[in-house]
Image (cartoon, rainbow, N blue to C red; front, top):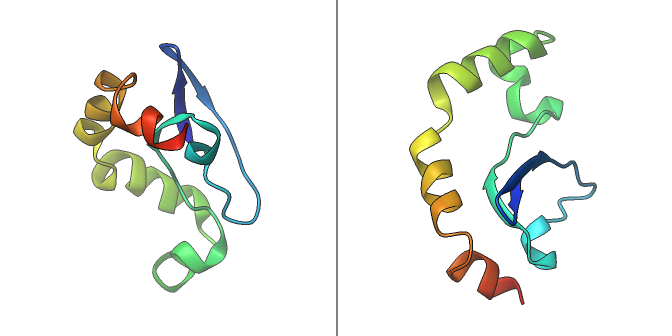
Length: 79
């Protein structure tokens, strides 16, 4: 998870599909790196999957929008 807390960015990992928003954290992006997310297309090539994901698939405008509304609905919904 790429998250923002009070304007500071950090990367967090969670287990068992726990969502940081449940703890009031503003989530900007998430990346699933378990094999079920990429194996059919990339087999064991996790680095290639991540390279493609970061350069062609992730919606950076969406992340920017989430960051700009940090103190609004995303955070309030979890409190």
